[in-house]
Length: 241
Image (cartoon, rainbow, N blue to C red; front, top):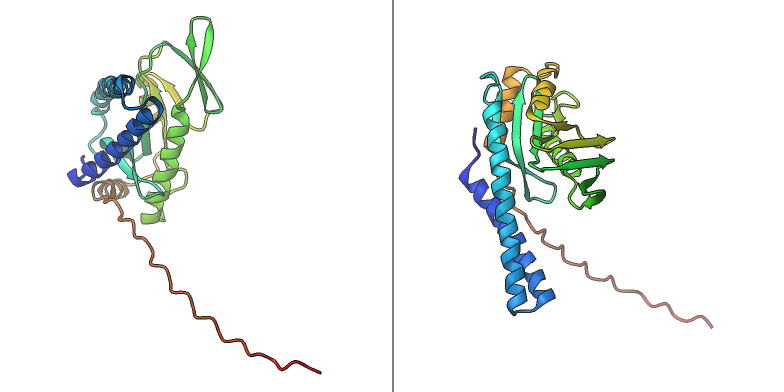
């Protein structure tokens, strides 16, 4: 299923604003000469490269997920609202009788370790810290989606939303005590979903899917400040003798 083009356009504006801010930071550090132009080019190049790699990995996972029963619903690159009134994107949003799964796909190659959401990658004999924690990101997605859907449908079961991070091509993954499940390979994801106990009816699945389809970006309304009350006159007392 798909969401509205207007919602996708709003998310693209959000991305463009972040890119503009990043370019301003580059120019602020390097000036307006050749180096700043090169820095901006390298930033855009890395963004495009990561997007292509991510799309290839997500496409492969998406094909495998098509084998789910017709009663299940799958959104690719789903947008969900956040507390700040903006949007955040999820690689695959899967809704079925076994629950709601927010799947984050990382096409990282090599070996990675994680402890309590702090990630490192192996470079030769050394382990180098990874700045962006995929499990922290998925935990944030889980929190935002759970708050949003329960505000619309307060009678849903508890612990309904899972947010696994899947590494389909990594050579080795070692993760301990992370906030969300860490899975190596798509088969581990399929096993996790298949073993999930039934917690949603088909009617609830369709209602949640419809809420995702009809999602609109909330308009931020700036509250009008209330006028300050006029100070009350103070009665002067006659000085005592």
